Image (cartoon, helix red, strand yellow):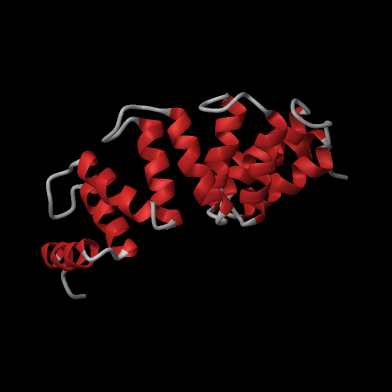
Length: 183
């Protein structure tokens, strides 16, 4: 294959980003966050993600949420992370939906609310997010946030397992072994 010319990519992304192209802004943010062809610089990444996120780019909103959650390039701020996750999640971004579910489960940036957590996990899981499927399986198996329902747990574990999730595969094996939610 043709070798990647990351410096050339950075040049063109920067030109487009400076003209307000939100995809280029998001890509430039990723390049700075990963230190590809430029020194790693989370503050610079956040600058570009903010510009892109303010133009309603769900990918940049999610990236900005992650920056605030992890305190990379900005002070750690779970409330701010939730704000950006919610904007991306409402546009259907499954990663943001999963992280919003996790935020509600843990009470990070929002009051702990298991019902709300399940809602966001379900939205992500229905889009095929294996982490969200695993979480829903665990929630239904344990009956901690919902009525215990092994059949529902098996449904979600199976979906995650079929995507190669070893933890879901192991749990599913245990459920078959114990006859929980399966014949």
